[in-house]
Image (tube, rainbow, N blue to C red; front, top):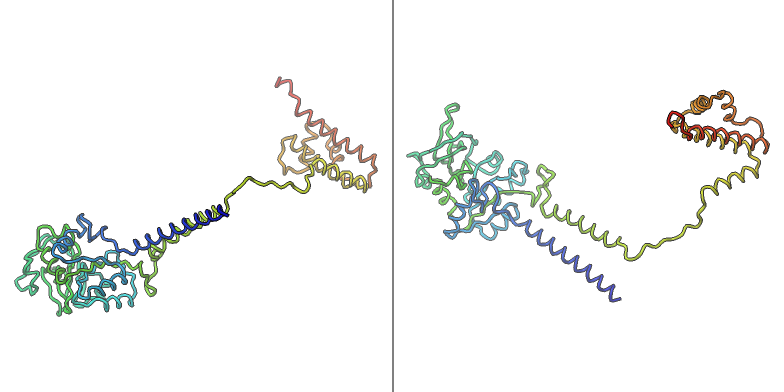
Length: 396
């Protein structure tokens, strides 16, 4: 009884440990990532954003990462006036449904948005005042225009290393312009939409390398320092899959995929535990063990008692042909005529004589005839066996 309780306690301990580990993994999976890739909050490489986030935090502005709609909603509930930086790092909006983008548009007030780059889907469903995004090649240095109406841009003075611009409508304001000579269109590196959204046409303007030794740092601090909290929203909708969007094979949340893996592992451990051997192997004797020779003898006695010499002779002929093929090193599927022809050739006997021995009897056989015929088959096999087992003079 005590041993049984110990086993039950061990099982409960293992299950509790696995459940606690899974709970921790699920909790970690729900936490948004801070440190990896483009505009990663703690990434100190060129594409990262550790520089601007450190500056903001030094001035008492909290920077909170968010990747799912649930995380974004939670952060906005705690900080309704927070500035929301939108950077489509994972291109999640390209496959998001119209309903998902409409929910996002209604969730974030326009005057609290800061766009780090503008994708086509953002332009269509989230942003007013932008006609298109235009690649600029590489603009090494841009000066602010005298007619610029944006105070942050006038304070910045100049920016550098710009690769994209936005073409604006009449109700938007932009600075740091570049004119495309082919289309005569004017693109702006920094802009404000008519409803108050801030637009960085190139997300690299907010990266560590983009803030180096130019006025982009001024633009970033002016745009992101308007409230005491910045929500760094890089959408990755795998945490709350979109039923109306374009499904992908990897749209399951990380915690679900990890849970499936560990469910398989735990099930395997449980099956191993339940199927383990806890004692010596128990053997059980068979009801009866009949040797093959005894079975053959018994069958012969049945034939003899019933005087079925015809069936017995046919069986002996088939078995003798199989043994002859093996002695003559012929294949198991060699036709009977080929076996008999090879036997006659090796023994120098007439083929008709050997064929007569292996032709099934037509008339009823007596016991004496059966014994004589059987002895002839045995003698023929013995002759072939002796011929193939005795070494020749050449080999000696």
